[in-house]
Length: 130
Image (tube, rainbow, N blue to C red; front, side):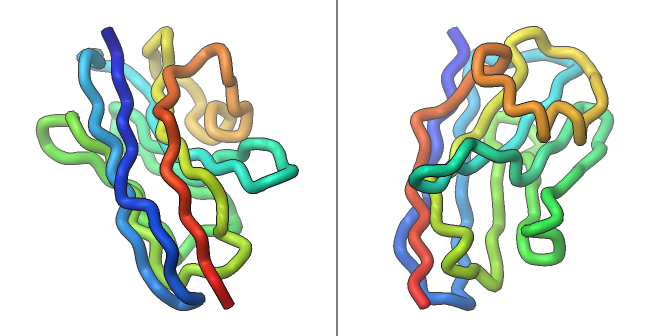
């Protein structure tokens, strides 16, 4: 059974930093796409950062240069280091992994936000005050 459990959210002031973690269990595949998404109140869920099993990494334009996605060597934890946070980064943050693991165009996978095609965690709230 695949489980994704996020942690690390919280409230920070503008310019601050947070590190999100996603504990991944039951997901042992050689080819996959995984990543972080977020959803602000009244808005649609959007992709933030993604990585695949080949080592490719992509970011949404809004977070480039501020956020860093990474994975531990055991591939059991996905991280999102968030620096220079802005009030517009306030959202519920989710990690996700493909239900049918395979290599595909990573940026398209991130933009598509396939709610039914991915496993999702329960989310962790990030609030940035000005």
